[in-house]
Amino acid sequence: MTIYEIIAVVISLLGLGLSIWSIVKARSAHKIAQGQIELNIHQLLTQAKKDEMEISILIAEKCSNDSSEMKTIIFSALNTAIERTLNAYEEACAKYLDGKVDKERFKKNYHIEIRQLVESENHKKYFDSTTSAYKAILKVYEAWNDLEN
Image (cartoon, rainbow, N blue to C red; front, top):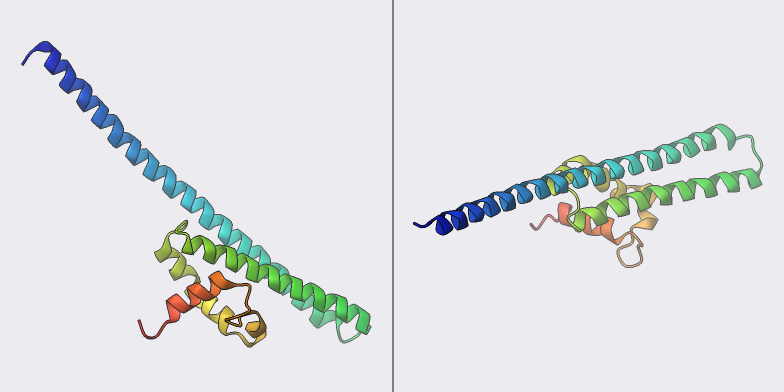
């Protein structure tokens, strides 16, 4: 083997090593980005549910004494908070369907919550299968709760 061949082999091995290192770094960066998305989803859902709960408490405290106009305003705020919560779940489910989160971990964390959300009598009007604006939630719910699979 000539010196030029040895240099070519060394350069090729260095290139191979650099390629492998780049792949490992890219996977690591992907996992970090995925973790950030999952954290954002968790924070978004937590804040939306907190807002909804605070308004529900306000209704319980105020509605027995306040005027019908005040009740209307408070119930309107509650509906807005419920829709914000559903929008947060919709965004989370869309990320799940797009593969932007770890699917096993997402299902483990949200399977029961999403089932309870869709099956809740309080949210029934939001989940009509033909008119619902929350298609991603319904798609995830159906995939996870299909008894035929």
